[in-house]
Amino acid sequence: MDCCAHEGPGGGDARFDIKKVADGVYAAVASPAYKVNCNTAIIENADGVMIVDTHSKPSAAQVIIERLREMTKKPVRYVVNTHFHWDHWHGNEAYPAAYPDAEIVSNNVTREAMLKKGLKRIQDHVRQVPGEIAKLKADIQASSPAQRGKLETDLRLAESYLAEVRALKPALPTIAFEKTMKLYRRDREIQLLHLGRAHTEGDVFVYLPKEKVVITGDAMIGWTPYMGDGYPEDWAGTLDNLAQLDFTHIIMGHGDVTGREWLNTFRSYVHDMVEAVRHEAATGATLDEVKQRVTAKLAPRYEKPFSAYGEYRPWRTGLAANIERTFGMVS
Ligand SMILES: [Zn+2]
Image (cartoon, rainbow, N blue to C red):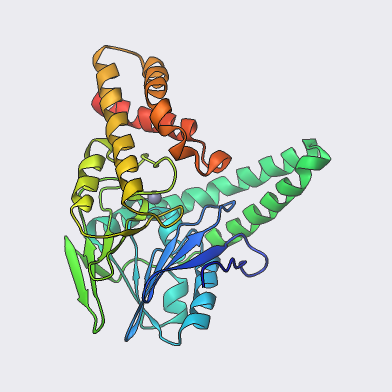
């Protein structure tokens, strides 16, 4: 079973390709969506299933639950959140609703971040999406027939997202660990690790030493990383810690399943971007000058590999945001 795109209930935009990565280990790779969904890792153990990350809304998690029921009769016992961003935990509530004994697991730093920042951001969404809907309606009025279909679909998706986010019952982790948590199942070992700051202060990595698989959350993705809550100066070092582990397959927060080659490219991008910004900032250049110079410097090596998802997540836009975040931290 390599590719079974599946549509969300009510014709939603949550679609996943379920890919086998090792025996009992699957990646549900999310397709681009109006409200971005993260990937989920599915780890089937002798006594139950572990899920890693739950997307931007409960209905998206529900798509995974329906797929899971076709795959196994075993219940979900653990749901791991890799970090506090909305598109990785807003679907949490679907699991305890479907599997009453399911525990939600993350580290203390991530649980705290959900409480202190995540809950507030849910209210931000409730306030902001109506404006997004109003804009889509205005855009539809002004649109050409060629543009209209997509805008109308987006409008429908924005309206159903607003209804979901308003009704959200945020399900916080029921188990929080400090640095490391290890689960010894009859048939496999699962390590939940904190390797340093990167995409957030609390990034959790899930490592299966026997199967040589690692699940990274957004500390690694298939396009330009989002650094808005991140630590650019720590990031490459955290990925160096990751590289110390023995694995062959990487299930990232977004984008297709990958391997060590992409870890090298991704790590180099983060490192080179930070060094270039530091260098330019030290010359007294303005933010605009730094953006221009660093982009020119990095484009020959990184524009192509980081453009695999094209217009969905353009590299230059992501890079400009990365430069801005880093500039603010080094200058
Ligand atoms: Zn994230």
